[in-house]
Structures are given as structure tokens and as C-alpha cells.
Image (cartoon, rainbow, N blue to C red; front, side, top):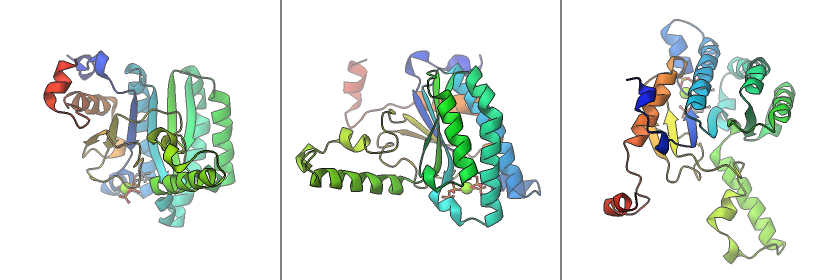
Length: 249
Ligand code: IPE
Ligand code: IPE
Ligand code: MG
């Protein structure tokens, strides 16, 4: 029985988020520059897109570049931005073929112009597709996102649009860059690190976390299925007790 066959189709996550980590270590292990690892990481993105299709996933969010990643050596940052431009244009036919809508979260205005243009063009061309949302977190950090949401909400309260008592969880969610996108049920981090690195802090309040030692360029479709099986082995209690969950099934 293949891993895919073992997956319970009634209980698959609708939204998976991935912290794609370990490209640099993967390259170093083979005596190459870090950028070599980033290039190979693109193949893993293709793999997870194929797996997402098999699983009928609705949203796939990939952490591709954090606001903190600007602090890396300039040649790595430049290489990553070039790779982004090349990858978006290279993969666009596949997005059309599979009716995948490309979206982005993060401070897109802060990306280099070539990158922003390529991204905006691809998002425009795919905006009516509904099979899967591929959401790239670019120049993203959760604290940046939450800080902006707080500023907007404070201004709207000041302008009398609503009162502070009307601030709900949903209202806060609607002020984040993920507005309209359901929270991820499963977050995967590769490379053996057990941290969140400023990713989707609000949205993962009740998300299941799956950490794997696999370095991102080695990540396969099977690794995604393993993560989903791990997710399905968990009991999601949302603060309740086990008996309440099993009774309601
Ligand atoms: C993830 O791999 C890709 C980005 C953060 C852009 P890394 O480049 O962080 O690889 P490691 O963690 O140094 O191995
Ligand atoms: C997180 O990976 C960001 C992305 C995957 C884009 P990092 O490699 O930047 O995270 P830290 O520095 O190890 O926490
Ligand atoms: Mg890393």
C-alpha cells in the first residue's frame, strides 16, 4: 500500500503551510555554494505541488523569504531574487495547466522591481483559478503583519468605523495579509529546526506542527504524505477533552 493510499480522504488538511528550510546545509554537504541548494529547492516545490493536487488541497503556503533574510550576504539575497523571477516565469505554464492561483503574502512593495513585476503579472494571469491557491510568503514576517494590522485597527477605531468592543478574532484575521484564507491545519518545517521563525503566528494558533529532519531540496511527495499521515494520527482537541471529540464523530 502506498503512503497516498493510506491517507484518509475525509480528514485531509485544506491548508498546509511549509517552512522550506535547509537549502544552504544541503548545498554545503556536497561542497557547493548555498545558491546551488536554493536552485534544487525549486524541484521540491514542484513535488509538493504535485502532492497538493493529489490531496485536493485548497491552500499551500510556502515561506520563501522572510524580512530577516535581507540580512544574509548580498550575493545570496541577489541570487534568491533572481531565482524567484526565473522560477515564477518558468512555472507559469504549469500554474495555468493545473488552474493554480498564485498569491503572495508579505511586504511585496519592498521586493526588487523585477521580482514585483513578475509576481504581479503571474498573480493577475492566474487570479480566476480555483483548484489550488499557491501562496508565497515573500518579504514576510508575522510581526510585520500583526504590527500593520494593529495600526490599521487603531486608525479605524479612531475614525469611528467600529468601537474597541467590536474587535473580534475574525476582525483581526481580516486585517492580516491572509484575509479570506482559512488558517492552516498543518505546518511543516524541514531541516530539523524546531522553530517558527516569525511565520504565521496568529494563523497557527491551533495548527498541528510537523518537524522533519529532511533538508528542503530532498523533500519529496512521499514526505508530504508522511506529514499528512502524522497529522491524521493526532487528536485535535481545541481545548476540549478526548471524550467530547470522539462523541461528536
Ligand atoms: C531555506 O534554506 C531557504 C531560505 C531561507 C530562503 P536556508 O537557506 O535557510 O538553508 P539553511 O537553513 O542555511 O541550511
Ligand atoms: C525561515 O528560514 C525562513 C524561510 C524558510 C524563508 P531561516 O533559515 O531564515 O530561519 P532561521 O534563521 O533558521 O530561524
Ligand atoms: Mg535556514
